[in-house]
Image (cartoon, helix red, strand yellow):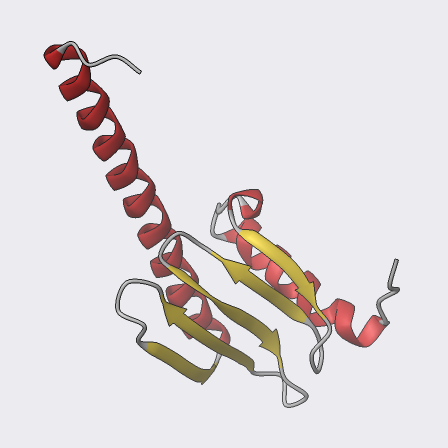
Length: 118
């Protein structure tokens, strides 16, 4: 197992505290610790993937690719901006999960009403 330095703990722990502050359950994000600059995470969500890490200049860098559009968003953010981006990513995650749930319910409801069996 790879050990992490105190330098990379700082950014990672900062993100963990942001998840807590925003009441986002980080276990719902497929995230992996990132040892880039002062630390952070790489993540995969149903609608986006990328990385967030703390730079040597104490600003957060974010690099996100949105799955459906393949649009990319890269920025250096102050803490307040990062909070807003993380809230938006969480909202997108919840919306995508709800959309998939509804799609599955509708698909299986249609199969039940038509009498289709596996």
